[in-house]
Amino acid sequence: MNTRAVLVFFAFVASVFAAPAAEPAAAPVPEPAAVPAPVVSAAQRSSPAVDPKEPIAIISQESEVNPDGTFVNKYETANGISVSEESSLKTLEEGEVVQVVKGSISYPSPDGTIIETIYTADENGFHPSGDHLPVAPETPAYILKSLEWSAAHPEEDVEEVEKKL
Image (spheres, rainbow, N blue to C red):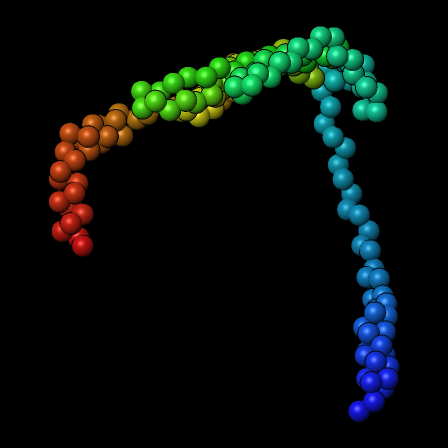
């Protein structure tokens, strides 16, 4: 077979696959459903509107990152947001070094109440606290009794599992 014919054939195949595909017909766009107006509190109506395009001034800012990974980060904005966090290193009994972060965040709610969250993040997880956060109910007595029994009888638990296997 002629080399030129092979090249022409492959050029033809390539042009067929490179040709733009026909665009599928556009599906009809359904009419948007009616959206109810948002509920706005009296406090929100009386507060000045904030233009989302308008930048908010940073009143103060401090940021420091150390070579060991510890840091300090603090800032306050003109609209009442305040953030402060600081990290340190902690050596555990096993000799492992972990980072501990302590901080707080506060901001004004739409009704003007200041919402503040204080937190710690360490080897045991993230631990926030604040008056606005929900609190879990107390553990029922029957659950506590069950946990106490399980802790006092671990060998019986193993024996029961082995019997079932």
